[in-house]
Picture 1 (tube, rainbow, N blue to C red):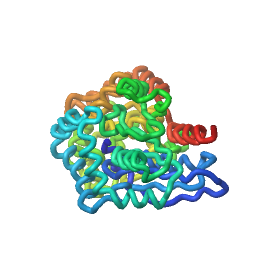
Picture 2: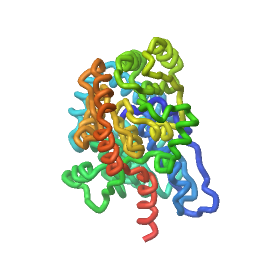
Picture 3: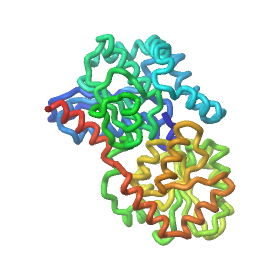
Picture 4: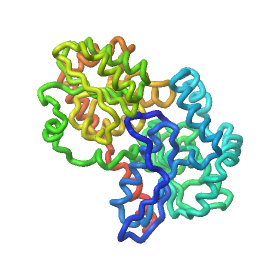
Length: 397
């Protein structure tokens, strides 16, 4: 549900990957490009499928491309506009709609009417296994199963730390959830324990690899003696990102600040311009979109960003403590509260105090080390593999 980093480009969803040498299940992954987190979770599963025996082909579909034109545009843009322009309204709606099964008949009926091309696509595809990383997709598959319009093993992968009511559906084989608390919640509202698996949120397999940090520092011309502060600038929008960058000009501790600007060339130019007069103890760098987030996270000391489910999972896999800036009400606020409770992140009361928070952490290496250790305990970098292995293992029994 969350809007994660815009550094991550739109996926090549809806491509079919044939896996040589494998004879087995046809896998369809259904995500939605309303916020990048759902798509990135789908991409992680798609990448992991190449390592899991028993899968013959993978098709990753952005379900909004199979909606009516008006519905697809409204569905993606309305969310983006609400969280950027009226976040309090989004937070109100999030809380108001978080009652299990409330208004589901009307919602599913509307979705079914708008998603007829997707239903036809699934009928033609005839997947053996369907994995949904967005609730819109799981609603449609659940409906089709309920009315015997499709025969498939239906798995739902929740991509935020809280299972909002929108994620709930009736027809499914298994829910994969990020935390023990989310599993407990599902059991309390009547979901059977043997159909819930705690795996974490699927992230790209690159985050589970062993990286040579010294080699990466040399490659990216990073001074190993000076902390690296990674700023996910592309997530905040132009104005908010520039406010954060200007605030970081007041840091007292030496630091290398790397602003990831995604595909926003104007933002990158503005960051470069705003930091020309940076004091000597601070080195700023503005980067465009990079596919090497796992490498930058590996060599960084702190990450400043928004608490989307995928971002948090990637940071935990990288043992990278976070400073959570301006979480939107709703799912990001819940995600942030969980990370603060676990002691792996801090959050300034205002962007003005951002440099204070950074300086305090950089002045307390033992505290930072403790945060990294806790993140290692929480990390589940192989979530994508675990999901697929669980489904394929259940099939073989």
